[in-house]
Length: 251
Image (cartoon, rainbow, N blue to C red; front, top):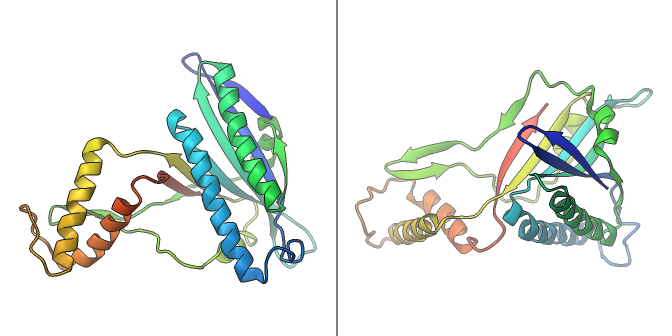
């Protein structure tokens, strides 16, 4: 289901929206997994594969992907709000056929993955989404961003560490606050040839310094070299994989 709206400059935006209505439990898929930990690892891997597939389709058209969690008041419950979960894609252009094709491709990829993992879901139109989000406060929005700096001539930034932590803390917080939302937005990007060359050059220099070798060039390395070396090595090793910018917005 694709909803198309007219915007300025003779351009249109197409919406593809999937509401995830239930998340599978180990009881449903017990024939495939030995325990909940094995299931979690497998599901993370499949979701990673989903992002790779989506990236291949989205990157050429610069289409963002959004995971939206909204909260809604409930009565006679030990918590104040329940949570609804949506996958949203938007495609902008002046050709409705191309817009619809791009959005439908995304929807098919997501629905195939959700079906294989036993999620219950349904497609929504934009008009069906509007009343669901109408009470969410939009006057006060916070953004979670990475800390950036220049450390002695080297671009440095904080990154979200790899961990086994799931979304439990986010969920336990959201159920306390009705009419709120958290939006995770992924925007596909790619490196320019100059950026690729710089990443490889910095990775080599930093790795040499980290391992006690002599760095090339005129860069004055600091005590942050180990942290920087590990960060740039990660990006160098994964430069050919799916790459996204991200926004995290809290309403």
